[in-house]
Length: 182
Image (cartoon, rainbow, N blue to C red; front, side):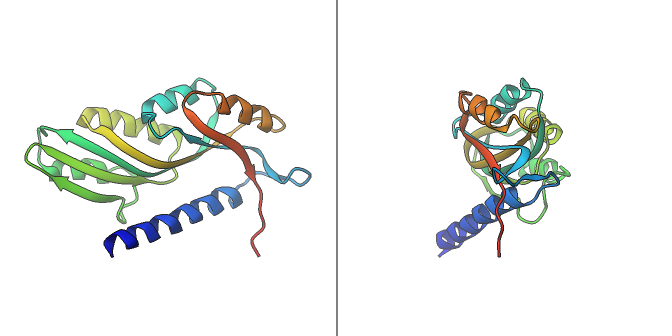
C-alpha cells in the first residue's frame, strides 16, 4: 500500500509539474507556433551528476527559469556527525520546502541515506546545493525526473532545442509549449 501511495503521489506530481511548466510564464506566447517565446525545457540524462549538468549549462550563459529535481538520493559513508546535524543543514536551506522534502532518512551503522525532493530552484540555489552537498560529503546515488527551464533570446528557441539536444548531459530538450486547459 505504501508503494502504491508513493507511486500515486509521484504520478500526480509529474502531471502537476508538466502542466505548471507549460502554463505558468510571464513571457508572451507565440500564437503562430503555440510555444512560449524565449523558453526551452530540458531533462538531463539520469546518470549525470548535478554539478556536471549545471557546469555544462552554465557555459551557455543562459538564465535558468526553474529547475525541478523530483527525487534525488544521497548517501553519507562513515558520517562525522549525527543524523540530526545533517538534517538540520538540509532543512535550513530556504529553497527546500519543509513539507516533506526530506522524505526519507535511513541510518545504518556506517551510512546515512537521504531522499530529497527539490522544486523551483534557480541557478544560485542549485550551486549552493552542490556546494553544501560537497561540504557534507553527500554522494548522489540516484536521481529521477529532473525538469529545467532556460530563458533564451526570443526567436532562437528551436536553435537552442537543437543545441541542447546535442549536449552529452541532456536526455531531451523541447519548446515550452503553450496549452490551454479548459
